[in-house]
Length: 197
Image 1 (cartoon, rainbow, N blue to C red):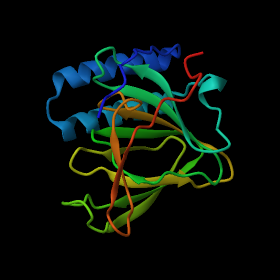
Image 2: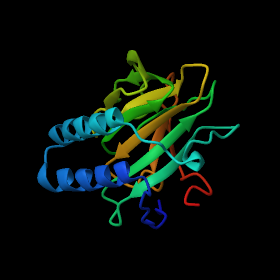
Image 3: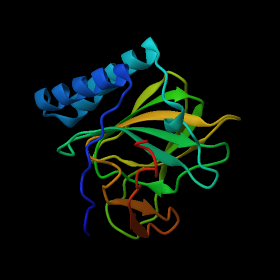
């Protein structure tokens, strides 16, 4: 599998630029993934609580599928921050991340269904619970040993999330799953076209 080259992106939202700097320092200082994601969760909670506006171009839903807009991509690919947008009625396939992730809801409602990570391919998935996340809430969505879920817009307006991942998520090959059979298909959530305008 060939990965696309990493293209660094810097946000022009001051609150998120400061948050990206915080994330970089936390990654450098905290080697334990669970402690790191908890620290990032707390930092993102503070940023969401303080309030900030996203550029309209980073909140625009696509009529056909969910989109991921890059807000910050570390030059070395160590982490990325995205604005993920689901329109009403949209969702994802069951998927993994191949890295850690923290998600905060900027606006709207996200419904997340978690699955136990299978120990082998072609092993049917087992549901592990469903949660509803609303504006201002933050969760550790995945660690490398526990990262299979499905998410969808759960309200009557688009849901916009601020997603932080331990890689350039727009270039990272990831697994999607058929939950009934466990069959795996590899995919990449390419960054939304025109997102850097």
